Image 1: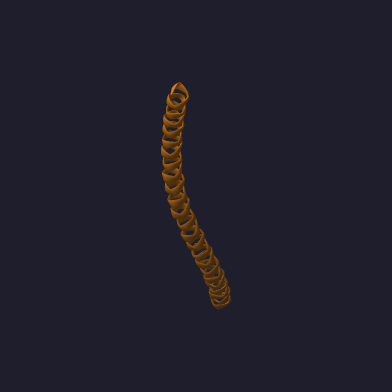
Image 2 (image 1 turned 45 degrees about the vertical axis):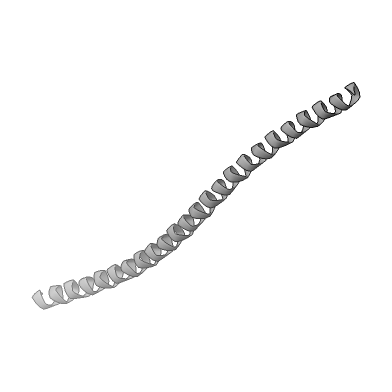
Length: 86
C-alpha cells in the first residue's frame, strides 16, 4: 500500500511538472510567434524603404542630368549673348 501511494505521489508530481513545462513552452511559442510577426513587419518595411531609396536615387540622377542640360544651355545662351554684344 505505501508503495502504491508513493507511485501516486510520484505520478502527481511528474504530471504537475509536465503541466508547468507545457505552459512554459506555450508561452515561449507565443513569444516566438510575436517576434516572427514583428520580424516580418520590419522586413516588409525595410523592403519598402529600399524601394523608395532606389526611386529617389533614380529621380536624383534624372534631375541632375536635367540640371546639367540646363546649365549647358545657359552657357550657350551666355556665349551667344556675348557674341551678339561684341
